[in-house]
Length: 164
Image (cartoon, rainbow, N blue to C red):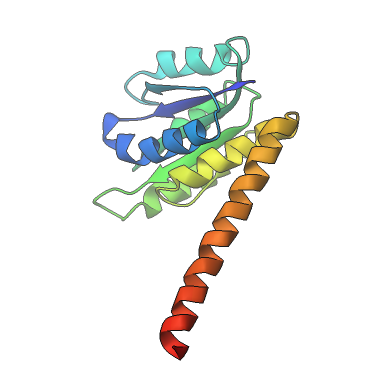
């Protein structure tokens, strides 16, 4: 199975990416996680992206706040799918990061999830990998079914409380 590469612009993004890593681990998807900044370590970020395919990665996830150029910088140096996670900051509640992540120029796409959307980034990466992996596709279907059951159980409990 291909690995998922996770890059964060700062270790302050780690709480968001722990959810990403936990979700990938629950689906038994291998991953690597690094701190590379688009601005402070641009060469390291570039080299990671340039070598990602040769190093066994199938999807890359980049999380950053504020100017949030990391996902774009990664995408500019690979043809692998890149998923951007805009991270909330103190200044503009993450809207700055969201707009920076989603507004990529034609030719350099970055799939973008919600602000602090670490779980959805992991699930989107899993869906991309599952195109060629039937076991992973089954795990995703099982997860969806389990999530559905949990919601229906909560509804049944609510109905019992309201109508009991």
